[in-house]
Structure formats: C-alpha cells, structure tokens
Amino acid sequence: MRTHEIGVVSCSGECYVEGTISRIATRFVLEKLRPNNAVTICLPLFSIGEEGERMFAKNFPTIAVEGCKKRCAGHAVEKFSGKTARSLVVPDLLKKWNVKNPGSRRELNEEGKKAASKVAEEIVAAIDEILCNSR
Amino acid sequence: MKKGKTDTICLSLLVTGDEEVKLSVKSHRCIAVDGCPNECAKKSLELSNAKLVANFRVVDVLRENRKLKPKEVTFLDEDGRKLARILAEKIALKVDESNTKGAVS
Image 1: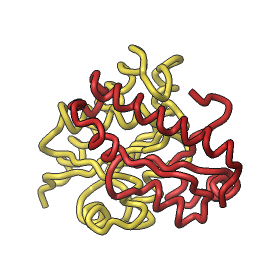
Image 2 (image 1 turned 120 degrees about the horizontal axis):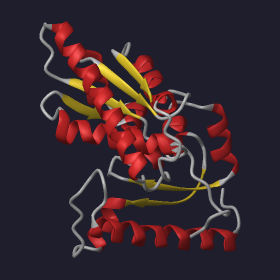
Image 3 (image 1 turned 30 degrees about the horizontal axis):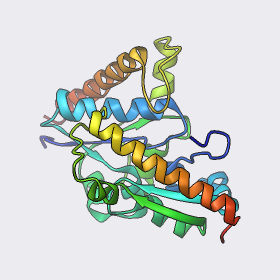
C-alpha cells in the first residue's frame, strides 16, 4: 500500500523549551518541507477522545515528536490508536548536537531556531523512510 | 507578569493521566487557556476535578480585537504578539482577583 499521509504528533507541553522546539519543528515540516505528505494531530484533542484524530492515527503511520522523557505523544497514540511508526525525543537530539542554550519556552533564540530546523530535518527523514518502505 | 506567583502545567501530561499533574491541579487554583473552541484545557481540568477559577479562549480575544489579524502560526507576527499581550493581561488580572478572593473550589 502506498502511503500518502503521515501524522506528526508533537508534544504540546509548556514545561520545557524542548516542547517549543517540537512544535516549531513540526510546523516547519507541515508548512515548508513536506506539506503534501504530513498532517499534524493535536495531542490534547486526540487524548480527550476526538474520534477523527484517533481514526487517522489508526489508519495512517504516525511520528511522535517528544519534548521530554515522559513521551506523552507516543504513549497517547499507542494507548488509543496503535504503535507509532517513529519516535523522536528532542532532548536526546539536542544533547547529541550539543545544543546548550536554545532560548526560552516562549521564544527561541537563533540556536533554538537552528535546532528546530534540524529536528524538522529528522522528521522529514523519518517521513521519507516510511514512504519509501510503503511503496 | 506574575512570575513566582503562577506556574504552568503541561496539558499533554494532564490529558495522558500523569498522577503528579492530576494531584497538582486538584490542589492549586487553575486558569484554562484554550487555543481553539474545542476547549481541551478546560475540559481536561474539569475531568480531573481541578480547582478551575477561570477559563479563556483565544477565539474570544480575537473577536474582541477584530482590528488585529494575526497571520503567522509558527512565529507570531506583530498582531499575534499584541493579542498574546492582551490575553496575558486578562490572565494576570484574573490571577489578582483570585488571590484577593482566595481559593475557589
């Protein structure tokens, strides 16, 4: 089966700057990098029981973008819809890339914006791999 | 505006049932701020039996300020920042009112 759409489920948390990076990276993917392949699923709406969001996640591959180690996005998808196709944990990526000061939760600085772009590239790589494997 | 007097909780943790967060919203006064009419924040607080003292919806702030037309989603533009400031002032006012009245259960 050829997959045309992939759901990106981003952290919606406000507790850490990694949550902000998760959301901005997801927006980069949806707006600029893969607008024809990816849609986003609103994590709070999904979690409180919106059927459309849950059906989508049941029927299409999903990528969880996690802002902290609690991994709410992946846990919610797996609880209500099924296994995620990929999981990206932003704090692990920032550590790997040695990002020290990405800015505040409210506003990313230049380092934070660059980190968000790199996270977006990781999401795109995951999307392309899923699409390639589904052909 | 209210640094040291307020804190934010992670809605994702609340909706996924984190016990620590559920306890926190039961023991502190809460203000829900919802980005869309589905009101996930308010509904999740109600479902958790939180001490909800007020709720705001961004769509209402938009209606009250029709001259402001934010267009950008990823990074707020000038009008988006103005709206955020207006909403922040409303929330801060509610924090002060709530502190004056004391805990509302």
